[in-house]
Length: 384
Image 1: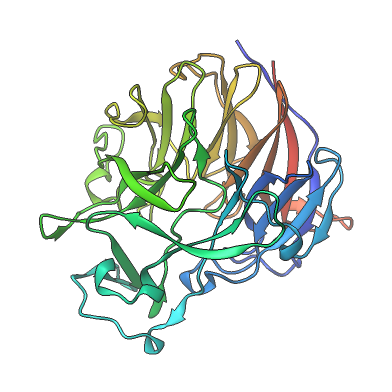
Image 2: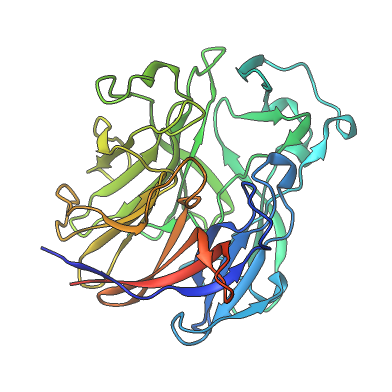
């Protein structure tokens, strides 16, 4: 029965006192660089498609997360380390004003909310500059990064325009791709597709796999939106399944956690698992009553951690190799009123066999003068 111990928070950066709006000083990401240092990246713009591709902030630690130094983004590139020695980093294109691009007729126009109109287009109908999946690649033994367009074979692929901007939704979300036990690369995204001539009614989870070091990708499987209507009174009105996180478990299975929280409010966090290398998935079941984009990590000790929340932020642990039985959640940030506690996005990075580093936001962390400010922090999570 693993017990979680939280270390003291280490402050990375704080927003100006007067800045309280949603988006800035949120959404942290952790990775380990080839030289062993830890890279932390976080968002400082609005949570909007208009901010896609804008600069983020970066910090580096050479002592396991105890102290940090702010750096420029170009000095902090990490990316996914591939078995062939290459490193791969997805490129986030800038959003562009609708007037700057020529688009065909949409296949669907839908009203997600009174002020949120979505136009959906076939990816194959768009110019290559608008539909390509871009990556930066650093080949093994080289120091330069080269941008390339990967071949992604996704039947019925779509693109979305919102807020009067051309919104290039991130192809592969930074830091989420993983190397599978067989050496292939996996990525999970949430999307709708055009199937049998119609746009799917809800977002589903799509798994993509590359067996050639990220040059080409094919659909591995799909998890269709299958909500628990007893657990969620808004189940039939939700956007669907979004923000998947997957983890290769010690027993050889794959565990996936999935968000349903949307504009309707707090929704359940679901889980499902695959026993055949991602070819098929068990029916989704409720993992907890809440959770936006969760993170998971299995430590060398065999203990698996999960971090998630909204409201609040929590960490849970399991020693079960299959991840079927979990201990009670441990509070990292106490839940508060809507958008007044934390963005509830987090990041986990292994430090040793039973310890991980957790990065997160806290909107009420005091500065040296005692004033509460939006802050990015890290702290250790020990599970033993």
